Amino acid sequence: MNPPKINQGDILSNKKLSEHFKCGNMGGMRRSHKTNTLVIVSDHTKGLYDDKWYGNELRYTGMGTKGDQSLYFSQNKTLLNHKTNGVAVHLFEVYERGKYVYQGEVTLSDKPYQEPQFDIENKSRQVWMFPVSLISGAPIRFNDEVVTKVFTKKLKTVKKLSDEELKSAIDNRNERGVPAKKETITTSYDRNPKVVEYALRKADDYCQLCEEPAPFNRKDGSPFLEVHHIEYLSKGGTDTMDNVVALCPNCHRRMHALEDKKDVRKLKNAVKTL
Image (cartoon, rainbow, N blue to C red; front, side, top):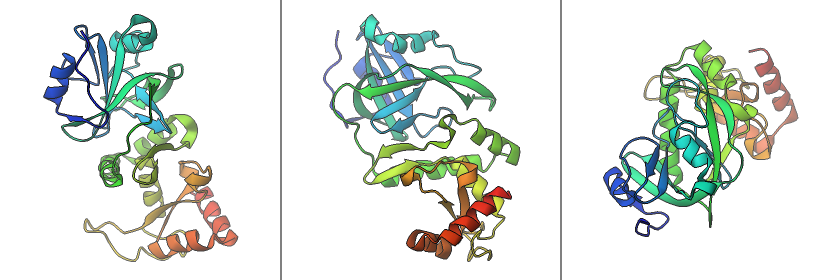
């Protein structure tokens, strides 16, 4: 039995989603034998899985919260074989708790691959990433303010990591710093909050261009500096430790306005000494 029609952009509660597809109400991958569907939920409000958009393709993290994931475990196998087993796959995204936004029916657009991520016990493990794309049309765009709120929350989480845990987490990222990109109201690059926090710590409260102390403190008392990518992400720069510095607002504007070669060289030398 096919589920009733649902339109892209419709927002369902967890209860309504479960009732609509006649599936369970927990987890990121929910199989329904009654409707012959697999619902996959990309919940950006939770920090365990690292799902990323690359243009119109979502790299979706497989099932399994502890230890290395298996490609043939439970619904990972269902998603892997969905083109031959007849199961329709439906994608929801969550940027605000309790609001499941329907993107549409998706299909595997490339072969699954493995990458390192942390599990529920904060231990490094191998997960399976499933590249999926909508069967028709493009993914809907979320308001940039909503996306920024999620990023800010992730920043608060990574502040709890020790220096060693932070550096290890960055080194474990797949793609070697190639930034994920999604379409919001404006095009935004999905920066790694761990890299942002690393740059702020290494600056030690001083602007790495003018070498003056941060001009003021945030409400929480932390020095206000802005993280700058020496080689811009929009021009192919990487989201890695050796391409980020912390600048005072004035110097940050200076870099974007002048792009002075001497300043660029100084910042590149600065990251080499960290």
